[in-house]
Amino acid sequence: MNNTSGHFITFEGGDGGGKTTQAAELVGYLRGKGFEVLETLEPGGTQQGEDLRDLLVRGNPERWSPLAELLMMTAARVEHVNRVIRPALAAGKWVICDRFIDSTLVYQGIAGGVDLSFIKQLQELACADSSPPIMPDLTFVLDVRAEKGLERATIRGGAARFEKKGTGFHQKVRDGFLALANESPTRMVVIDAEETFAKVWAQIESAMARHFNL
Ligand code: TMP
Image 1 (cartoon, rainbow, N blue to C red):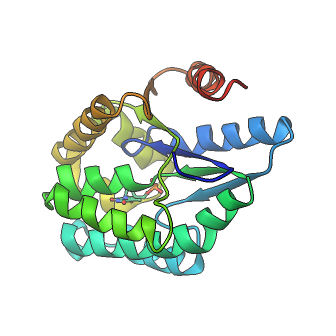
Image 2: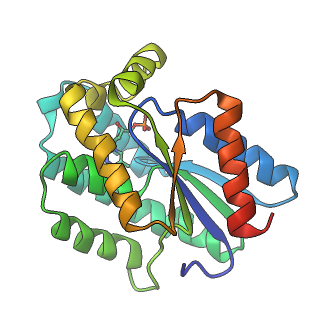
Image 3: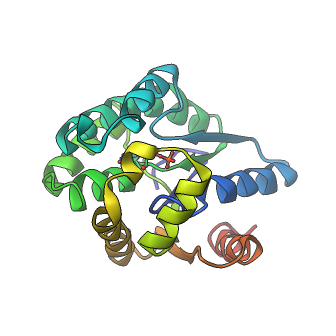
């Protein structure tokens, strides 16, 4: 959208959808074509973000309220956008980010119950600072049924605090991402993530070819 010379791509979806593996595949694919790529994630991507991630993903589900989560996710994002993402885009790099704003709208808003218009306002503040807002050019939503995703995520280990929020919460997460994708069909591409790794990657590769003429 408004990302000066680089391209900003995000991976979104419920837990256990295979975002991290597919994002790594995309990074390798772009580097293989000779592009400079920054691979990053949220919450995280800076030391400040990693410190907040550590607080957010551990412990019991009630450790933080959705509002407290929103503020911490957004604090991490402010540092990430301004210290890492914006400079990389300005330098003409591809930025591949595992989760971004849509995760906040879904986990803290649609599933967590925090007012969506308040979240949107806060995200504008976090991503605009004094410069044009940073928004993904393209977002892959890796869609998987809640039970299936939780099963995979439990085997893999990881953001255990969010996974412990239960199937009902994760059903809302899945529905939430699909609803957002429905509202932004140009930016957000839904990928059937229950397929094999190769079939999921094939869907991503063809969407990349369509959007960026690769
Ligand atoms: P992940 O890195 O394994 O995807 O774990 C991060 C967890 O944080 C995941 O369960 C989703 C959650 N999350 C939010 O709730 N809101 C956000 O804004 C972001 C970026 C992540």
